[in-house]
Image 1 (cartoon, rainbow, N blue to C red):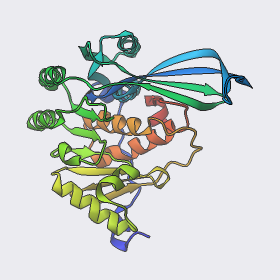
Image 2 (cartoon, rainbow, N blue to C red; image 1 turned 90 degrees about the horizontal axis):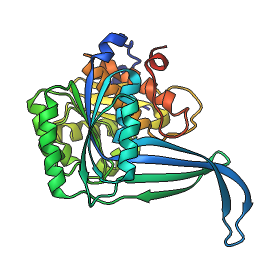
Image 3 (cartoon, rainbow, N blue to C red; image 1 turned 120 degrees about the vertical axis):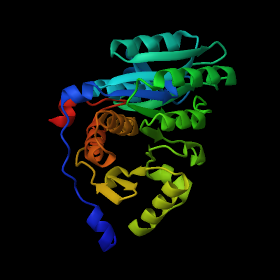
Image 4 (tube, rainbow, N blue to C red; image 1 turned 90 degrees about the vertical axis):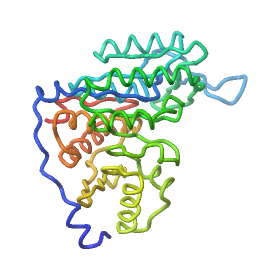
Length: 324
């Protein structure tokens, strides 16, 4: 159970209202690892005579933007302005991805590396469940990453907030330099972290680890008091304004200089948690860009995450859904 003083901060804040016009003026730059999510749907009627595996007769194919592209897609779906800076291969997958994103109004700034394979995740779906996933990927070269940092500097001044979406694919090798530029420009910096080395995210505005990612960095906790101590120690060590821990069925907790603010999970059937973290950070950044504070944006980000887990695959939330 939370300690009495922590319970006082673990309240349900009154959500600040935001108009469609204010959200439409919010400009968010997403930088990070993009991927093309491919889905092959089919019927499973028999087992292969060659091996004890199901035979999927593919009847439908679908493509979606994944990773940082899904973050940008969530921003656009809410009605804010999304720009996406990423390194991709000079290949068919990147062309498909760019065309997909253009349809949603996302401004793409792709640096192409002829030696890089655009990350593709191919999922085979049968009987309403994922049967197999195939990943195609490798790591970008330093020269292309240096070009990305230069393009980041050129784009930065026209943005209201910046998201770094780290999927560990190598696109954010120079994230420290970009954070320094964004901090100097006075832009809110939101990090969806990866791995156990959070020192590279120092001086950001807020990082948004989920429960397991947070445990990987600070170790497990056995009480709310212990989590509070660990979260504030991490925040102070990295000179962050806040740490937002997303905690699945336990909701999410924001740790900042004023203390802690907790919101409970939205009660709904959880169908698929894929991309829920993308939705949360995209909603936070869009609302920060529209003038809300982290604490004001928190309940809306929590609500958006609750909506998206009721959808299959990487999905988005519209303004109408969020503010209904």
